[in-house]
Length: 494
Image (tube, rainbow, N blue to C red):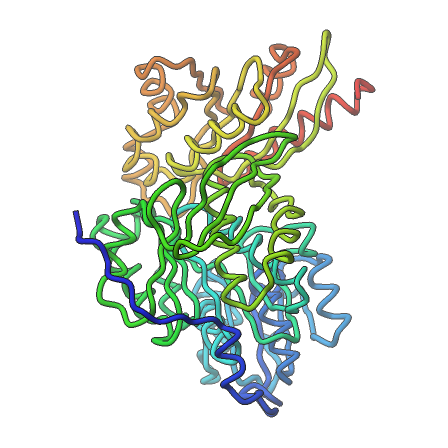
């Protein structure tokens, strides 16, 4: 176990920093430059495109199909094409930005190489844009989308007019990305491909560190080193906010220059959440900072883990100069991000109704925490989890952990594994039926049903009053609950 990290005796807020820096004066490094986005309709890509237009860049981009996002960009002056060909790359382009899904042999990529145009990954451009703002980067194996969205919403509600890029959409935020006129820029920082190494924030957060992306990282030690580099890149006059309960976080934060602050629930930490009580569908708890009572917070989201996320959002907002009463109102009114324990609807059945939820959880720890939170919040007669494993490699590496993750589900239904970045060896080494067998070995009811269509047929026949059905996974498993709701309501049973 690593030694307790010594806290630096420095009190810092971003608000202090804003007063010491002169306002940025145009032009910016992007003024007048032509930037082309391949995959411009993505959540992060579209947000960056909007921000660059605000910085004076001439933006163009391509995507496979039109969407409300691309139409909005076109409406404010971006040149959008859906051809995805070498000819779609405008003459005079200075920089090409591509999403992670774009392959090197994409015709626009090949054209950019041939013409000697600078090519940047999305994460690289994100880092350049952050250098023009006061960056807040939120990382961790779990919870970063919810925490980033909650923080962005709280700062938005407090009239800080922030920019943000979140890895999930939120109706309250108007989407997943925004270009604001304020100095603050909040981003969800992803560890895959070490993309967060492109960020140099003023406030950096690590919520937790666990084994994941083991098709990319060798082991937990390499993952810890990657998070350490991220934390080491925080502005020396800034703040690193980490979990006091996570030994990997404490290890990753050793010997960094930024001021280290910890957060925790019912334990010693700089930011403490204590006295959690649930009533009227909300969690109510006290928050203290370095022993000083800040006040109470109320949270609509289910789960103890979201109390920790809210504490982090409150800490960040405090460092950004937001008064506590505005933090309280912002966090209390936040309703969550899409696919994060999202209530899809309730369905009428004989004798009552069925609650239908969708969730993005795809790692054992996320699954365990989410199922417990759903059981405590909704108190269903039966909790039925339709879990689609995401990646053969993740399933293979974490198979035993996955098998123990469904203790709070009464029934677990597993379709075929969603294929992403997997090798032939990975695909041959594990399958969904093997996971079902392991879940049963752990004393829980589970069944392998290969397709979504077959799962829906089963649920329509089996569901009964008092059930909670949750679709869970990072792939398209949301289609199960979406189709279930549409089928029942389409039959006139709603």
